[in-house]
Figure 1 (cartoon, rainbow, N blue to C red):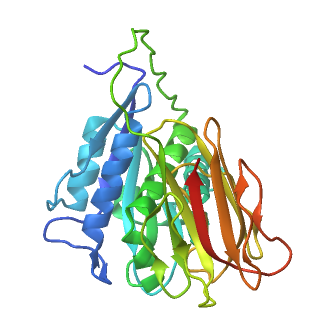
Figure 2: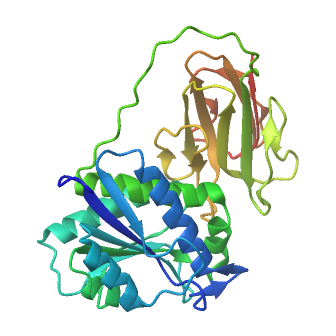
Length: 332
């Protein structure tokens, strides 16, 4: 039996089974929506007093009526439908029922989710298509607040390339969960720390893994511990960079200076700085790991390799319109 103060969230992965949804660039909507829905479900387990029900957890056919009937019968507090767009556009947008005005609680919740998702995926170069309304069945026939999100366009090559990346799907899921937490006032669980006698076990040394998104190439493949990510002598810009720490729980903080946009927000291990699909260059980077000595240098257009920088220092240039062409990072 569920407690009275449990927030019930119904997650509807669009399409499924005999209904593939939109198709394009080697992708099917039904597979992407299920992958995102499962990631959201998993992340919500970190919150107190939340119960999640899925319209489907496998590749099965579920009618629109079955979806809303299940949510209504369960007494869900919120209905979240996940979809992928098509039709040749680009970007992210979301919908509420078109008879719900902008001065309602539903709209406020929609706005919270929209802002949180865009905060996560804008660094990938995703266009914000805005907050909208429509007469969709799942929005009209659900008895609770309901939102439908359209996560990029499957038939647009640049969008599809992002949808093929698991780190981008993770960003979509994080954004949805952060938005739900704000909209529904969800509180994260506090992890208990149990004191115990330290056990001496062999451990691997911390290491650093990084990948550059290069003009005309895309994501180039992981590099490790001082190897070169990017190109030199080919006049290709690094457009985005992701860095991940392994074998340590220490916190990584990084920022990138992007052409025309300035410094990005601070990002953590496994996240992305820069843009993808916008044709903008990375001009400088800053990395910092409290408790580790991280060193990094960049290959700058016309200038070549910079000196090694460390612990939050700037590698690269700002205000000189020069691209970063390659990056090397190491722990010492």
